[in-house]
Length: 388
Image (cartoon, rainbow, N blue to C red; front, side, top):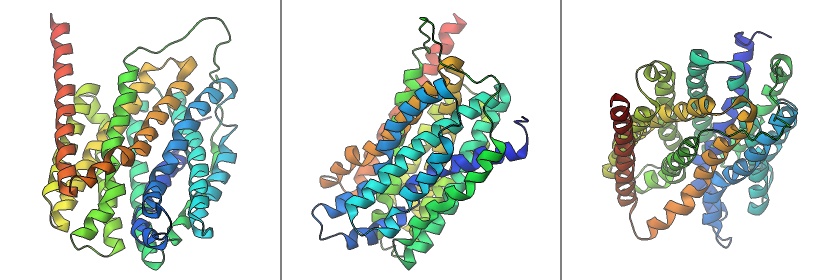
């Protein structure tokens, strides 16, 4: 198997793109969806939850998927997961019951937890060193570009009817044939060792896990709340809302494309410091933004920051995880990633009862700046210890 062939790379990238579209494709549908279910008890809150609801089930299933693929191989679950992805994802188009739609979103989440863990582990299996670093950046960039396409389509389709964007989830069926044609089990497929030896990753891997959860808690307020924030400043067109959210993803793609060359010059900690600094500036711009243009500037800066930090976290975990437990550790990374997305509205939205949108973004900008300084500080401390 030639892992450098464009067919293998394209298939890995297409499966990866299913991850980002699983969450934010329906973001522009939320305001109209809220109106539809406004008379249901807690209807508006449940509609907002529907965006992040898959993340809980991604978090749960990824941990299990990681253990399974270490023991039984990478590809056994992939085909089934892609079919069920389409069924669960499209539920909002077919169903009139909000609770059943949430059940469909849960099924979607289970499938994403499986597919993302498998594809990220395959990237670590197929590529090493500089090649892995380049592909990890490319993977996040293509995920971001896929997000742009699906978010923008979702915005335009939501102007037809809020249900129509749910049909975009059938994209997984188009990807399915390529996975059977081009993805193969690694020749030396890693299996969890049956001996009594306990294999562990270095403790710093938990810093990466908790950090990626923090990143997503902060960042996921954008697709959850920006549609409503833009409405309050007079932006009524769902297509414009979709474009605003997609712009974040566009600049995320740009910085992800640049990740490999940046990583050649900077440490993992420095890249996290830069990423959080860009996000802090972005959230500050959103906080002071009373116009669509100012909010867009904030979205762009936030996207640049996240586009650096996501491949940075992925590559760091790939480097730290022993091959024997690679699937388990990447499953954990996926779990913390999507747990952050799920708890983001639970943690942050209650603040809107006491704060305005702008005050919330001011507060988050301050927290992001502190995180940036912490990473720069720990890098300098570690560098000085090495010098001594």
